[in-house]
Amino acid sequence: MSCQEVDKTPLSGKILHHSLQRQLHPESCMMFVPAKVSLHRPHLLMPTFTLRRCHIQLLCVILLVTIVLVVWTVSNLRNTFVSFHAESDTDGELVVLPEDFAKEREAFCLDGSPAGYYIRNGRGSSQNFWILHLQGGTWCSTESECYKRSFTEVGSSLKAPVSARFEGFMSSDDLVNPDFHDWNMVCFLYCDGGSFLGNRSQPIVYNSRNIYLRGASIFDAIIDFLLIETNLGSAKKVILSGSSAGGLAALIHADHLHQRLQKIPSFHAVLDAMLFLNLTSRNGQKKMMNILENTFHLHNIKDSVSLKDCSQSVPDEIKWQCFSPVYFYRHVFTPAFFLNSVHDRWYLNQALDITCDFKKCSSSDIKYISDIKSSLLDIVREIFTSHKDGRYLTACPVHSVLVNRFYSQPLAGHISPQKAIGDWYFGRISSTTKIIPREDIREAISVCYKYFNEEENTLM
Image (cartoon, rainbow, N blue to C red; front, side, top):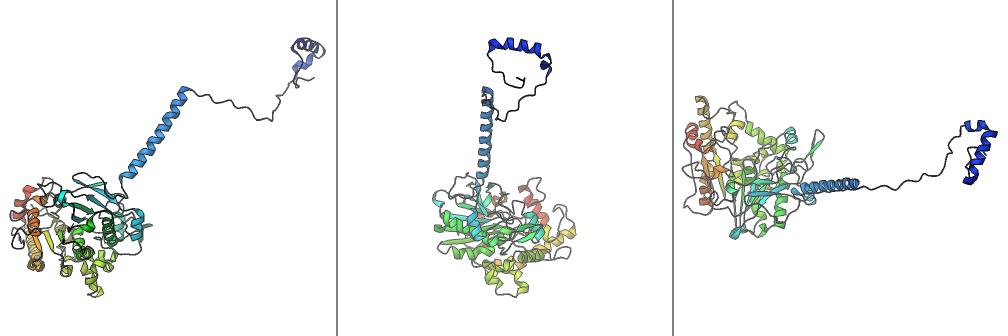
């Protein structure tokens, strides 16, 4: 028997056997016996569960569930489908069109995300009254500008805040907005860069990124969605409003929307800070013309349904002028109220190269600004002869006055925009509102400055 074999003798015989073996073979005890290799799978011990290990595993499960809940909650903050939802008393809550709904209508922001809007529901007896407001925010008139814009809240619903503060004309405060505070309020998210008028069928590709120019589809898709999900279709009164680039959009879309809502008894437009005139800048350039013309062509605005009456009546080389407010105005039949500053800060700065601080402008700057004011009044004289429209001009160097705190301030003739709009809309005055500011820029600064904060030297 070798030491490699398994010993099976009884215990009583083992001692004698080993004693004799040492005497007969003393060298056997010095032999190296390798361990026997077993081909059988080793037996695993059952895991031992301790209280500490249970606690760790329980904590891991709780952490995992918490992460899932947080991700789910965050993803649902940006609603993609809401019929009627709870909102605050003052803010508008973001509603993003369902992806299938937006895709069917190709209603995409610049980055390809679905279009959206902010809403606050009406109250009491005004639940059938609606204000539909188009946000402003200039334009993107080059591929590079649209590309950069697509990463921001004016180019993507993914970047848009989940709520928007409604002020001025959209305020729920009856002291600030006594005539319209309890109406349904909708603010269209401006994420197309083309005044809700773009109609390019295919996206452009810039830096390997698809850029969608679908503003006209966005406008119609939001109206479609509101007609399905709200009582807009049975509204008694509707006002389409807009500021800056949104004001130009409201002017051009007014008759088109009025035709879509033919059963609504009362339909009006309120247009703020949108008199972008084709005047030569201080440096001899037609900057405003270039912005409008380049935007018109880049976004293929000529094929927008809302412009067809204008664009079909002019040669191709001047079709872009249908995107000019003064030119397009003659095609509009909807009663409209115009608000504008004759010293529009954005227009003077961006289109006419007037960059001086209005309190410190040189004499030559003051004269140039005065000439611009006279030209503006001459050009828009046609608006002042219409009996269906209202107008409110201020000399204060502001851009927009409709949906901010300037709405309730007496910026012209001791009358606020709020009072002027209400008097026109509800017929509280016998004659059409006509407020012609006579102050030059220096006088306007002294009169208007009390309405501005100290840090608001760059008024917009």
